[in-house]
Image (cartoon, rainbow, N blue to C red):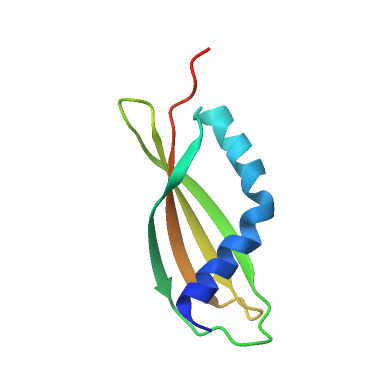
Length: 102
């Protein structure tokens, strides 16, 4: 399968746990609204084939916090096939706004 399709599939497979992960992360580093995706880096290691069973490991990490409180969050997606071989390893970087003042 083409690389962009595999990346889209990887993002979709982690979508159900994304909000829970963001809630957990906000307990460590408060942030506001999600402003957007600012970068994607992908390393396509193997082809994906029709009939493959894919699973995705999601590894979040805060890469920086700006002086104004914006947060850069890197989400590494490691997609493996049914043989536990890494098919795609990609990282999307999200820009999260500063936490709202109370």
